[in-house]
Amino acid sequence: MRQAPRFLFLLCVLLCIACTAEPASSPTDTQQASGYPISPEKLAGLADAIANQEQTLLATWYPLVVDPVNGGYHSNFDADWQLMQDQPKMIVTQARHVWTASQAFMRYPADSLYLGVARHGYNFLRDHMWDAQHGGFYTLVDQQGNAILNGHNGYKRAYGNAFGIYALSAFAKASGDPEVLDFAKRAFQWLDQHSYDTVYGGYYQFMTRAGKASHKGYAGTPPKDQNSSIHLLEAFTALYDVWPDPTVRARLEEMLVLIRDTMVLDNKYLQLFFDKEWHPVSYRDSSDATRKANLYFDHVSVGHDVETAFLMQEAAHALGIPDESTMLVGKSMVDHALEVGWDDALGGFYDYVYYLKDSTKATVLGDTKNWWAQAEGLNALLLMHTLYPDDGAAYFDKFAQQWTFINEYLIDHERGGWYSGSIDKEPGRIHSQKSGIWKGNYHTVRALMHTSDMLRTEF
Image (cartoon, rainbow, N blue to C red; front, side):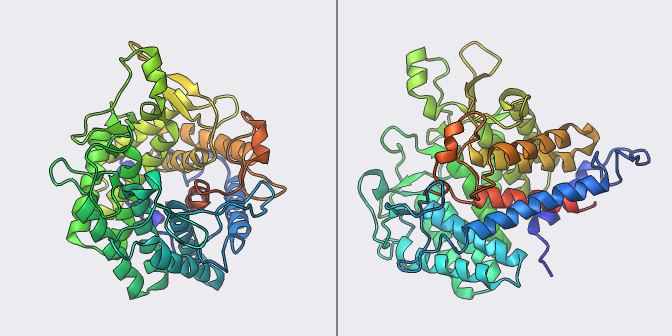
């Protein structure tokens, strides 16, 4: 029997809060008792299609990406799933594969392939990606597992270490191996000792190899940021599930509040970068030339907003505090993403928008649609429908449109996998890599698992 996903417990708790309005009228042919505005037959068909894509993705990636000679996972595959010559290995990708394979085993425990794939990656994290001398995870190693320490790769990052903790937590749960849990604890303690800011809270992004945090950032990049923070939140959520330690709980709650109340501006969108005191780094009031030169540091990333809306709810559930304020901020972020970054014609979330000086209306500056944001958007839209069913079919209709969009413009039905960007905007993406150090399957598989389960569960 399949293990019930932890995500379903989140939904059950949150729905107890969300469904406080008066009972809906009797269901009709189009408004079912489940709250979905389509018939049970169509709902089952949609759930099956999404579940089939999940299983197809897992079969496409595993065991293909396993490196049986050097350990860990191959990084780079071309558009036809052929191994490319250059094969560096990054902590983020390696850890995400451990997480995905662990989740796949817990979901399909009869298939021991996934447990073996996860164990294979765990051994590589332990033996090659962890710095045995100074502690912490290296950012990048070569194909054989030798640390690459030139330039920015010589720095350890909270972002990469967060994914190491995330992977170890999932594999500890999947395997039941106390050695793995001990490693997860050690990884958290190292990060907390070297990256945590005891004065202003949160975590510094960059650390030297020996673990000294950079309070000024690195090479023009500010010292604190939302991307590290939301994935630390994610990692601590997973760790607290297998190790309910008081310090882990305190950091998890701190990161939730910090993200929700400081990093999310106007309850709508995340600011990307901050100084050490959590002042936003913004170039909105600068000249056009300065703003354009610093666009990487200051824009609205629509994908991160919809992803964070989900991660905050998951963290609140882990803490046992699914409070209304967290739910409302998450809803506001998804609503804002739909308002300023959604393609009404085809579906799909644009990459980024910007609020120009003296303007209250966002301008779409990046109208391409990267693969991971579409997966996160799929998950967030259906989550909002389950949390706010009284809003009618608005979220569900967008969710259904998003799945149609993904199915038509992102999934490579002939060769397997997803394109790196949607081919409605970038037709050339049909020739792009299917896998790279920044492109794995964690966003996609997670979203497909969650949405197929939500569709199949009646509350």
